[in-house]
Length: 523
Image 1 (cartoon, rainbow, N blue to C red):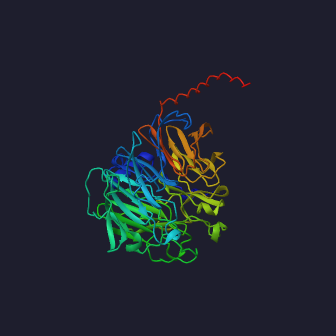
Image 2 (cartoon, one colour):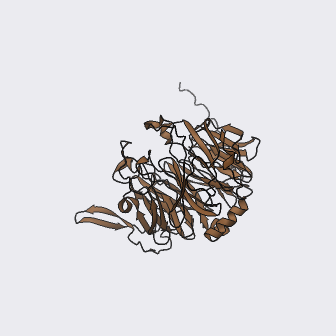
Image 3 (cartoon, helix red, strand yellow):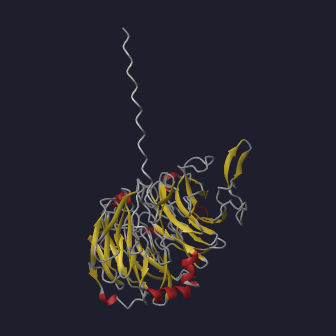
C-alpha cells in the first residue's frame, strides 16, 4: 500500500458536505427525499440511515419474506424504490405482456407493498446485435426517479424519461406521444400503437446513437445521476467487434441533459482514441473544497471531473500505474472502470476492473483528495492506494460509514478498510465472484455473490458474520432498503424482505391410504 500524506488536507465532515450539497443543489435533504437512484445520493455512497433492517431471512421457509416476483432470466439493474413502486431492469423472458415477444430490454414497475406487476418497458434489441446490444442482457441501467418521472438508459442507447404511472392513468403524457413499434405490412412500414395499461409512457427520449453518433460496446448501461435539473450519464461508447478499432472517437463518452426536455446541455469525449474497451461506469456529484463537481470514469481508465453546469474540465486522474499495460482478453495490468466513484469526507474513492469475462487479475483501489487542484492531479492527489495482491479487479462501488470503508472485488473478497489511511481491518471470502456492491444499513453490511448467497456482516472494525442465505440464483445487483423493507434482485426474481414475518407452516404429510384387504386367490 502506498500513501501520500502530503496530499491529505482536512476533509469536510459528512454533515458539512451535506450542507454544501444543499447549497449547490437546492437541498440535500430534499434530494434524498425526492430522488431515488443508484447509490441513494449523488455521492453514490452505498449507505442508508434506515433502522430495523432484517438481519436474517429464509426463502425456503418464508421467514421474513414479504413477497417475491419473477423477473426475466437475467437481471442486472436495480432495485430502486420510489413513490410506492419498485423498479428493476431485466430482460423479456418472463413476458408479463405475452403480446411483446422476443428478446427485449425491460424496466418493470412493481407495487412496493404487494409486489403486484404494474407496467413495463419492452425495448427490442438493436439490429447490429451483440457488438452494441448483447443478447438477453435486458436493461442494465438502474433508473433515477424524481416525483412522477423516471430516467434510465435503454439497451438501445437511448436516454429515456418516462411517466412513473405508465399508462395506468389512461394518459399519454408528452411531448413524446408516438409510443409504438414499426412493423412491416403489405402496405409498407406501419407504427403499431403501444398504449395498453401495462405499457411504458415515454415523456421524451434522446437517441445517443442516432443523434450523438455514439457506438456502444456490448451495451449502453449507465445509471443516470440526477442533480437539480440535469441528468448526467455515460454513453457506453467503445470499441467495435474486433476490440481494437474505435468507430466513434469524437462521440461523447459523457453527457449532461436537461431533465425536462431531453436537450443536450454539454458533452465530453475526453477518452477519444484511448478507449480501452467500453464505458460502463456511472457519474457522481459532490462539493469538494467548496467546488461543486460531477465526475465520471472514462473508458481510458482516467477519472474526470467537471464543473456541473458548463462541462469545464476541473481535473483528471489516471487510475492505473504508469507502467501498466492494456492487453486484449484481460491479460494485461491496465484496467478500465466499471465501479462508481464515491465521495466521502472531501475525498473520492474508486477501484478499477474489467469485463468479468476477462477473469480475475490485479486491480487498484484509490483514495484521492482533489481539493484545490486542477489539471492532471495523478501525482499530487493520492491519499492512499492498494493494488497487486492487496486488491484485485473490482466492479463494486464502496460503502463508507464512520470512516469504515467496505468494498468487494471480483475475486470474492469483501474488505473492511480505514477510509482515511487504507489500513485493512479485515477481509471476508465469499468463495464466489462478486459483481454487485456492499450495502450498509442499520449497522450491517449486505453483499450478494454469483453463487446466489447473500452474506450479512457487522459493520464494525472486528469481523463478525451475522447471517448467510442462498437466494436460489446469482445475485449480481446491490440490495437496497426502504421503510424497513430490504429489496433484493437475484438473476430471475425480486424479493421483499421484512422483519416480523413468520415462516410458512410446514405442510402435514398426507395420511397413508389404508391397506386394502388381500384378495383371496382363486382356486
